[in-house]
Amino acid sequence: MARIGDDSLIVRGELRPDGTWLFTIRYTVHFEAAELGARFADSVQVSADGGATPVPFVACGRSVLRKKRVIVDDEALASRDDLYATVCVRPRGGVDALTQSARLRRISTQSLGTRPRGPGVVSSDGRLSGGARSGPS
Image (cartoon, rainbow, N blue to C red; front, top):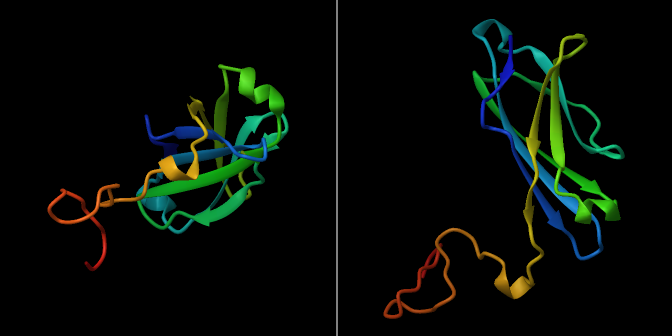
């Protein structure tokens, strides 16, 4: 039977400038050899009104990384410290479901000038100043 990887469920919440929350949920689903090629569907629930509809996918390998983004417009989320996201994975057309929950890790809102710039890029310029850039120089 398929299973959601232990310690693979990562939940991140970010308050967006418009007052809504963007939740990013990442997890790995592990499949048995007999399940390869089978159809599954997964969904995520963050709050009572903040969930995503099931999305179909195919078990194309023994381990499949899944990523979901859910936007929730709920001002009460800002004051709660006990938020969890619950992932549900079920075989397409099946009744047995895998569920797993993880606690939310919050990310504070950052201004555009302080956002990370990506791999290999730092704020200083030039070879002599120790700066690094990705791409051609």
